[in-house]
Length: 111
Image (cartoon, rainbow, N blue to C red; front, top):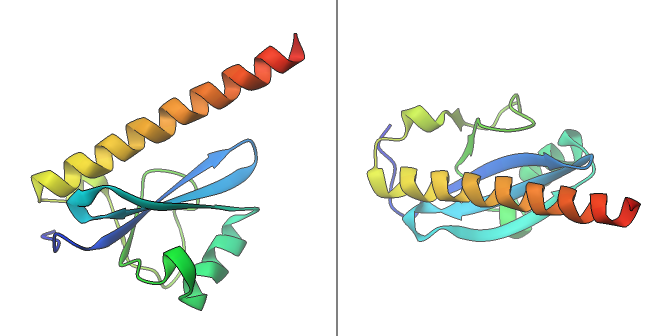
Protein backbone atom coordinates (compact mmCIF):
# COMPACT_ATOMS: atom_id res chain seq x y z
CA UNK A 1 0.00 0.00 0.00
CA UNK A 2 1.34 3.38 -0.97
CA UNK A 3 0.85 5.91 1.84
CA UNK A 4 1.20 9.69 1.92
CA UNK A 5 4.33 10.90 3.72
CA UNK A 6 2.24 12.68 6.39
CA UNK A 7 -0.24 9.86 7.06
CA UNK A 8 -0.85 9.10 10.73
CA UNK A 9 -0.45 5.49 11.81
CA UNK A 10 -1.34 4.00 15.18
CA UNK A 11 0.80 1.29 16.75
CA UNK A 12 -0.82 -0.45 19.70
CA UNK A 13 1.07 -2.32 22.39
CA UNK A 14 0.41 -3.60 25.89
CA UNK A 15 2.54 -2.94 28.96
CA UNK A 16 1.61 -4.35 32.37
CA UNK A 17 -2.09 -4.55 31.55
CA UNK A 18 -2.29 -1.10 29.99
CA UNK A 19 -2.82 -0.40 26.29
CA UNK A 20 -0.32 2.04 24.81
CA UNK A 21 -1.12 3.78 21.54
CA UNK A 22 1.77 5.38 19.66
CA UNK A 23 0.91 7.73 16.81
CA UNK A 24 3.46 7.92 14.00
CA UNK A 25 3.29 10.74 11.49
CA UNK A 26 4.61 9.18 8.31
CA UNK A 27 8.37 9.18 8.00
CA UNK A 28 8.70 11.93 10.65
CA UNK A 29 8.33 9.33 13.39
CA UNK A 30 6.57 9.41 16.75
CA UNK A 31 4.06 12.21 17.15
CA UNK A 32 2.52 11.20 20.45
CA UNK A 33 1.73 8.46 22.95
CA UNK A 34 -1.42 7.77 24.93
CA UNK A 35 -2.29 5.13 27.54
CA UNK A 36 -5.63 3.33 27.99
CA UNK A 37 -7.03 0.76 30.40
CA UNK A 38 -8.48 -1.47 27.67
CA UNK A 39 -8.88 -1.96 23.92
CA UNK A 40 -12.47 -0.82 24.30
CA UNK A 41 -11.31 2.49 25.81
CA UNK A 42 -8.83 2.93 22.95
CA UNK A 43 -11.58 2.16 20.43
CA UNK A 44 -13.85 4.81 21.97
CA UNK A 45 -11.00 7.33 21.89
CA UNK A 46 -10.47 6.61 18.19
CA UNK A 47 -14.18 7.09 17.49
CA UNK A 48 -14.28 10.39 19.40
CA UNK A 49 -11.78 11.93 16.92
CA UNK A 50 -10.25 14.04 19.73
CA UNK A 51 -6.74 14.53 20.96
CA UNK A 52 -3.72 12.70 19.60
CA UNK A 53 -5.92 10.10 17.87
CA UNK A 54 -7.98 12.68 15.97
CA UNK A 55 -6.26 12.20 12.64
CA UNK A 56 -5.20 8.56 12.75
CA UNK A 57 -5.61 7.06 9.27
CA UNK A 58 -4.61 3.43 9.91
CA UNK A 59 -3.90 1.01 12.72
CA UNK A 60 -0.78 -1.06 12.07
CA UNK A 61 -1.47 -4.66 13.05
CA UNK A 62 1.63 -5.54 15.06
CA UNK A 63 0.49 -5.53 18.66
CA UNK A 64 -2.47 -5.65 20.99
CA UNK A 65 -6.03 -4.72 19.97
CA UNK A 66 -5.61 -5.97 16.42
CA UNK A 67 -9.31 -6.25 15.66
CA UNK A 68 -10.49 -2.68 16.16
CA UNK A 69 -13.78 -2.46 14.28
CA UNK A 70 -14.43 0.25 11.69
CA UNK A 71 -10.80 1.40 11.69
CA UNK A 72 -8.65 0.81 8.62
CA UNK A 73 -5.91 -1.65 9.45
CA UNK A 74 -2.78 -2.64 7.61
CA UNK A 75 0.12 -4.96 8.21
CA UNK A 76 3.72 -3.84 8.33
CA UNK A 77 4.35 -5.86 5.17
CA UNK A 78 1.68 -3.80 3.34
CA UNK A 79 3.63 -0.54 3.71
CA UNK A 80 5.51 0.10 0.47
CA UNK A 81 7.17 3.44 1.27
CA UNK A 82 10.63 2.66 2.65
CA UNK A 83 10.82 5.80 4.82
CA UNK A 84 7.47 5.18 6.49
CA UNK A 85 8.24 1.49 6.96
CA UNK A 86 11.58 2.41 8.54
CA UNK A 87 9.83 4.84 10.92
CA UNK A 88 7.32 2.15 11.93
CA UNK A 89 10.05 -0.45 12.47
CA UNK A 90 12.06 2.03 14.57
CA UNK A 91 8.98 2.80 16.67
CA UNK A 92 8.37 -0.92 17.22
CA UNK A 93 11.98 -1.25 18.37
CA UNK A 94 11.60 1.70 20.77
CA UNK A 95 8.41 0.22 22.23
CA UNK A 96 10.11 -3.15 22.80
CA UNK A 97 13.07 -1.44 24.50
CA UNK A 98 10.70 0.55 26.71
CA UNK A 99 8.93 -2.67 27.71
CA UNK A 100 12.22 -4.30 28.63
CA UNK A 101 13.27 -1.28 30.68
CA UNK A 102 9.90 -1.21 32.44
CA UNK A 103 10.20 -4.90 33.34
CA UNK A 104 13.75 -4.35 34.54
CA UNK A 105 12.69 -1.50 36.83
CA UNK A 106 9.76 -3.53 38.13
CA UNK A 107 12.05 -6.49 38.86
CA UNK A 108 14.46 -4.21 40.74
CA UNK A 109 11.60 -3.05 43.00
CA UNK A 110 10.88 -6.66 43.98
CA UNK A 111 14.42 -7.25 45.26
